[in-house]
Image 1 (cartoon, rainbow, N blue to C red):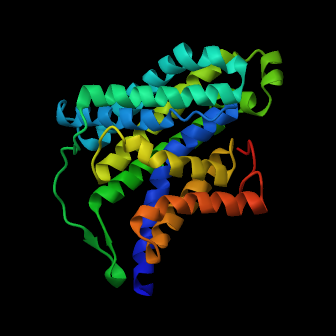
Image 2 (cartoon, helix red, strand yellow):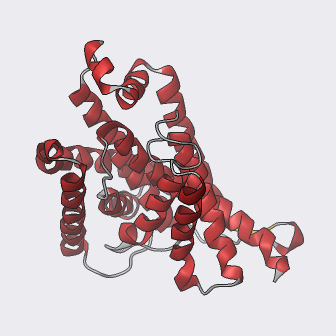
Length: 289
């Protein structure tokens, strides 16, 4: 059993890095708009299917289809927020969060109506796993997914750190009143945050599907882990979302040493209980950039 630990650690690091992509989207929306937007789940599914159409019908390679997943899902996310969630935000975070749950169910069923319930797979070349030292294996597609996730995360961090728009987003998250006094358009920032966050959710959904298959419940299956990653890292903290995702990803994989796969999701909630008991604001605290 102990011999399985290196393989599980590798799997956990890959899974955690991919999980960090939608988790950052979730925590970015919370940082700027101050409510948990659970439509991340349905938008992850939409992104998975947008990439699927680009890959299978359009003939795009998987790496290029990820861009389609990002753009399509980001645009849909902005429309959904403007039409459904934005008018409800003045009513408070709880009302908006409940509306987000209702919206995600609607969107999930729209995907089901268009694509059906069947499992679908991407058009990918068949390649053998690579053998590592100590009997460990890693698939070429896992490595490709890892690289795409790392590139997406690096691009986001560079955008936030070195662009004027990225700095405006951080200022709105830190102090919306002061940002307004400085002339920053909060509505414009909110639309941009929704586009980026939902686009990342779409990328995350596609990366998850590339390793297995997709159906209308693709996003729903991962939303609990995404939520756990954001909370463990610290809601509103983008670096925290990465730390939380890696913690949850590795924890879920290591749990297979003693638990059946069906109980993996419980690990995320156990991590929430432990971290919030010891550090209520999460590992990296709130609004840490």
